[in-house]
Length: 212
Image 1 (cartoon, rainbow, N blue to C red):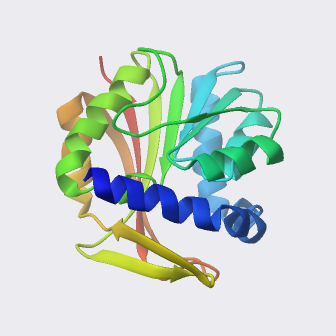
Image 2 (image 1 turned 45 degrees about the vertical axis):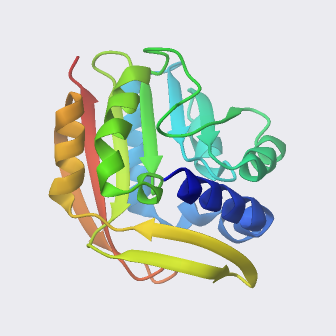
C-alpha cells in the first residue's frame, strides 16, 4: 500500500498544473455538490475551521474559504499543494496522508472528503474513518463522496501525461460500515449519475457526524 501511495503521489504531481487548468471552475457546473457543501458550512457555523481532505489544486478549498469559514486543504501530492497555495492564498494548505493527517485531535469543526477515499483500498477505509474522526471535534459534520461499484480503474495516461494511479470504486455499504465503525453517525446518503462533463460513473454522497 505504501507503493500505491507513492504512485498516487507521483501521478498527481505530474498532472497538478493540468488539473488546475481544466477543473478550477468545476463547481460552477455541479449544483448538487454546491448545495451539499453549503449545508456543511451552515452546520459548521461562521468562523469554523473546515478541512478539505484530498484538496487537489484547492478549488473546493477556495469555495469554502469564500463562505466565511477558515478553510484548510490537505493533499498527498506536494505538487497539488504548491498549485493550491498559489491559486488560493486565502486558505491554508498542508501536505499529508489520509491515514496520518497533519492535524491535531479535534482541530476541525467540519470536513469534506470528495473523491479522496477512492485512492485507498477497501481494507484501509476503517483506518481512514478512525483518522477522520480523530481530527474532527465531537458533533462535527463530514461530507464524503466516492464512485460506486466494485472495480479498480487504472490509468497509465491522463490528459496526455504518463501516470500510474488506481481509482477504487466502493459499494455504498462498505463506506457506510467504515464510517459507522469509526464512530460516525451517517445521517444522509444520496446517489447521482455523472454530469455530462464528468467521467461516467455513479456517485455516492454521505453526510455523517462525529458521534463521539
